[in-house]
Image (tube, rainbow, N blue to C red):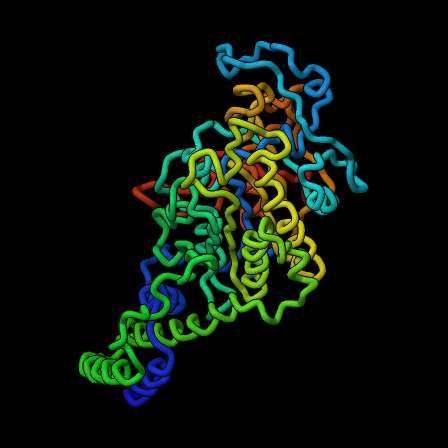
Length: 475
């Protein structure tokens, strides 16, 4: 037990900075000192040697069309306008319009020869660093359920998201920032709001912390509001001195929990210094900002978030969840392109606003040596139909879609899986989020079948009772 005078000195230190995030910091400190319930804190002891230590998850909200980005189908291009009878699981005939060939030009890129449309020219230049999963499948074609499935492995809410599991498994790399940070689209939150980065039944310290650079207060409650004029250095000092007296009066031998609470204010103070530093981009060069699309109103908002994602992993954040698309505006402002996927449409706008920033992120991580230890995961909740909805749009399609992974332990330029001749459903080497999550955990050093948390009498896993490591895309 440390002497009481040290407790007061700590408070004097904190009073110069301010308060905030006390409960989150306290939980982290209790975890460090082994004071949470047994089994609640996870472990930083990996099952095998990891290939990576951090993750950036890029979520294209709305259902990005595989037919107009990465899944080239000559038969679809050749037979556009024809009527085809599609069937779904169980043999029920699907109501379908005529085949809608992609209005975008397809070309092969990189040494691997990956087909990409000219809707994504910047990402096309990065294909040799990516591993494509061409036959992803989802059991739902509903937005909220699909988004929940890809982030947590379950179609129903309430289960921990991938970032929370990574936090639980690996813990922190830095004392100054959260383990798991969520960066929502500057336009707004995803379909399920802040539940998109929930800790579920894992301890609360594993919940993602939202950081919204587009907001007036990027981190809610980090600093006192401007209206709280009564909060100043003097008032905080008086309050903390009183708190010190009360704590000294209650401090009992071996009461390390109270000591942890006191130390939590130090962590809050460090975060108050660290977060503004992450958001201050003055030390970034003009060339770096240009790489992310700064200077263009179409690309700069998401480019800023991508650059901040790099700065977060650079400073020790384990998991960054970055959103492209908002669920607040129906089928606009995201990838839910029911009405039109032609040039000039919302589909093109989403491609333009994300293509250069995400390609810039990959290139920047690679040039700094960060890609070797950071997994980048690009995904969406489901795909789109190869037939038209209306005349120029595409409907939801959970039967097949495309995801890609890059970075630590991933073999760039590889492809796994294949959809049918029209990109309507997965045909060969089908994968689901379970397999992607199992592969991600494997690269972080964990056996997905052994990483579990006891909840309501069951040993729960991120991959539930499914999943296999996709060895074909590993370096």
